[in-house]
Length: 105
Image (cartoon, rainbow, N blue to C red; front, side, top):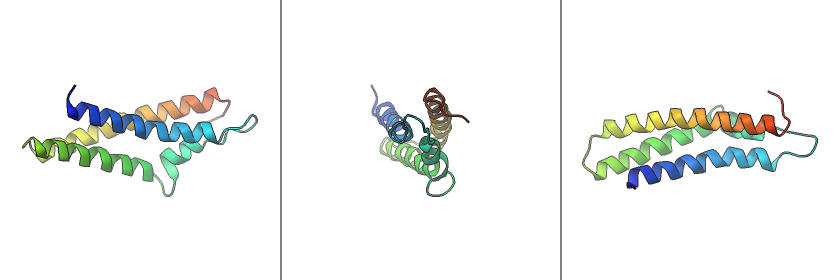
């Protein structure tokens, strides 16, 4: 397995797990707070977590490709594509978990 795939996969999984854990840890029997959405979309300002994820994906791919003497623009493009894929995946996971716990959108 390549280093690029492994590191991007690790970042992808960790970034997805954080809002899922927030959703699970704040849910009680009668109250589904939607904390996973707050982490993913709003806290501490709108889309802060998404900007953080984008920074991680882009900087990681620039670093990996710079060490391989490949163009930096390729790393930026790869990071942006991974950011979009990650956001859609994470939003769907958090939404599904929220609904399965009894929450309403």
